[in-house]
Image (cartoon, rainbow, N blue to C red; front, side, top):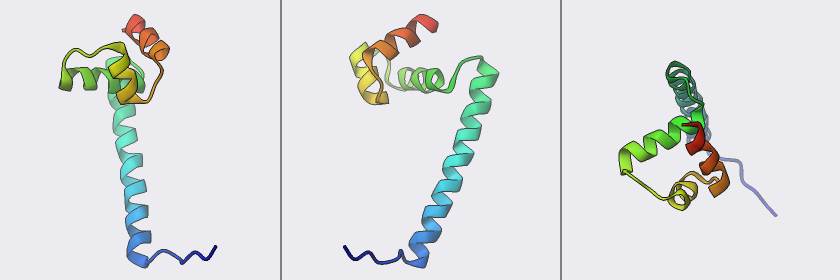
Length: 77
């Protein structure tokens, strides 16, 4: 299969998006540390803050986790 090299602008965009993702992750780490929860819990709390009450299945689906993981998270929180 013949693959062309990405264009310079595509390569630059990919690198910038990677840097942004790393920066966002650092902010998430700092916020979760400050609040005393792990990052997955913080993401879940933000989801519930933004969307209101959701079933375990809805939370699991939106976060790409299992229902068992969400049940354990709910018990922690």
